[in-house]
Image (cartoon, rainbow over all chains, first blue to last red; front, side, top):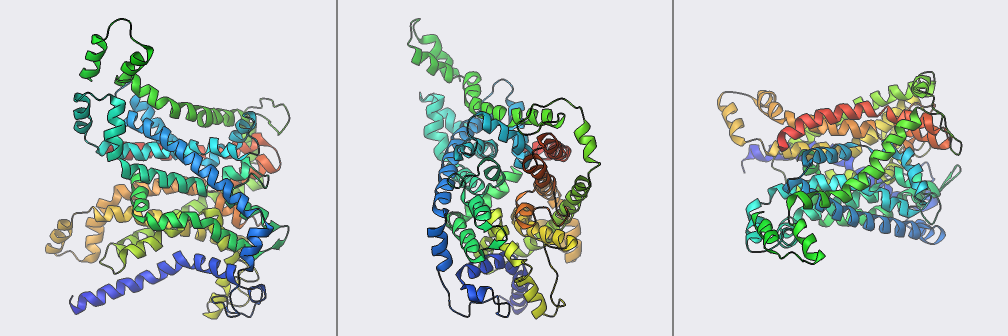
Length: 279
Length: 313
């Protein structure tokens, strides 16, 4: 590397520094707050960027034993896993049909899926709350299992349609010439080729439903039914008294499942983010 | 396909139901609708039907637990008489305009930096994308604490660097500062989407075009204006459209950070609709507020279909 190129490269890294601080500092501060002792946390003369009086886990133990945090997390997991699975199955077969088969109104249906993909959850939460009540699911986590697929299915379908188009038609036709039915060809030939797409759709569906907030906030309210995001934002705040340490501990812990997935599947997240928008 | 038809013709008249269904499912015009119907059923029941209900609510005086009557477009008109709604309408445009504008400029800059040769590229990309992955409601709690009126780390840093006069702004308690705070958090959360998508667009620009431009004597700025920007235009268009609809309909950030306050100065359609429709029970009016999101959605859908569809088919 020439000297000029090296300086240029170092300059690029320096330009990145403010962006990285902006992106990461809130997480650092959140984790730091959750580990501070109260006397340091509420000392206005202390330096807020470091822990100087020793770390503590008291906020975490308080969160785990004195609140229903574990129940909220269990609810989140149940809702997320079930709605992801259901949406992935429905989305996969719909995407296969819309991208591969010729049948009545296929083009219109594809457009319809795309349009619903763009409908924001905040547009329909009021009437959907009524529908949820009529279904007898008011204030129940099952309301979320039923309603989350409304935004997950369009997303999975749209993403997977892009992937299925990249699988050459000939591969499937070969299998059918050899006597396989269309469903066998889909199950044994097309789906194995589309595994990266399926992983991507599953990851995004998991992330989107874990992060969902407005439906969870509107459709559930009892402490044994709410999800982690709602529990941490509403149950840990009592009147004007904020337990900042536990609040931050809750925000950190409830993000852990997503962070773990993220660390292992970073490349899928990157490709899914671009594919969802552009494909 | 031909194989399936031959199969149908070859079976004897009395075939088991199972075989007949199997044969039907081997034909595209049957399998297609069967595969699409679960999705269709779900979306009709839980998207199309609630949408019709929203339309009905918005032209009625529906109130939680009371029979409702048709009152025409009175909800839509009456809203203009409410200070809270007029303020919200203005907020929505200020919020969306500022947030999307900054995300576009910052996203383009950061994507261009990330497109250069770098050390630890994967790690850096991972860090940049992180705010998009973490549950927004929870990361916004972190920002809430950072903007706390007594213990704000933002103010502490500003004072330490000599950028602010003590005691520093009360971020969430003063109207313009509150709007700034909400916009900043939205930029923070939405920037990764811009960066990653624009970066994908940048990577796909052929290197030869830059070499040709350089050979013709174009400097870095000319190359940016005449090569990068024109070729990036479709990607930028799509990113801006996507971001516009999701920023305009944002709920989480405002709900957690300010609850729409102080004095409605940060309310968006979604947060006001929730307050009016659920907290005070006037569902009809709440639905009408939500439906003000609809024209923007329509414009974005129309533009997207022109852009995206042209590429897909």
